[in-house]
Length: 463
Image (cartoon, rainbow, N blue to C red; front, side, top):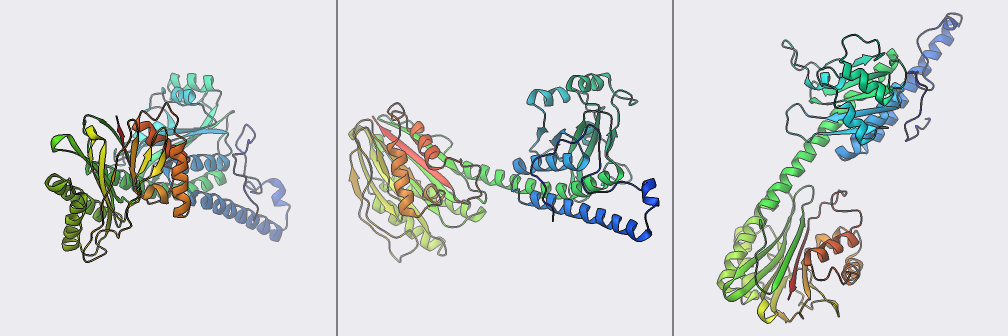
């Protein structure tokens, strides 16, 4: 099958049939034998199907609204023979998200188009049009404006904007189906008076219905992710405590399905501080609920016997084994005395903390131990360390390492290298240290990956 270039072609100033797609019958067709005419039409149908197949295949490969909307806008421009356009995502239920993107239009030009009263602009009429009282689910028809200068009933502002931006015609398509409802609209702009041919309208209509269903699925996924992230954030500290002698900073990102990674910082009697990070097995609402219960329980145990981190984790392991025998978790709890710059910590199957300072960057040597819930009785020795003035202790979950995609030994080496490369100016700010480690270890960012791993960092800088 002939390939379709990924860029939007620059067609003539008027709408024309797609390459290889014959237009309506011409006088020359009448001179063709019936068999040749049928073959010619069949070739056109095959070309149409090939075009739609390749465009929809490209759309299916998008996994987010940010990827899908530009793809829809570019594919539509190729189908209707336009050079510029804009797409507006504005779900009819009002729950969002809402956005506007352009093709061949700068941000300021999009803003200029949006100054046209919505009741008179083509895309605005599709978005704000009242439902049919008899058939409220009916999808509105596309709106073609062949010549902005001569079209009747247009607002003067519409003609003024068209003249300023240099377009003479437009074709607007609702992004709506009876099943998905109204999600938005797309409008393509022509440099000279024009409108799509009947065949082009048919193709963009087929593509638009498929695109709307795909956008509806992505919209549901994005809303679900946002809800999961909101719940996860509500289960974590709303703010970090202020304890003399130590500065704290935390970074947390929830995976698309919602994981069970968590952190905590708890003021304790006599100026002490409890620091904890952990990860509950599984994803989704059940993992979030388990994470909330585990974090709340650890806070209670820390208040009762925080000076002994082994006892805190032992109590937590017993609770987990009795209440959720099918679940396991990793955890690390540290009892810190900032005034003495002294930390006693214990870990259960958790990655070792990292000490970052002007003269050293090294992992804390913790004893190997199983995760909570894996053994009939958990216990492991604690370790003690004394950070020097200005040093930062970085606690994190293994999601940070797994998101790199490297084997664990290589991921640990990369984490050490990232921490070692923190500039001297940033070493005085635990938040800057955490941000630098994230940027260095995950240069593509946390929000552009489909990785399901949560990421948690908790940094404590001792003065």
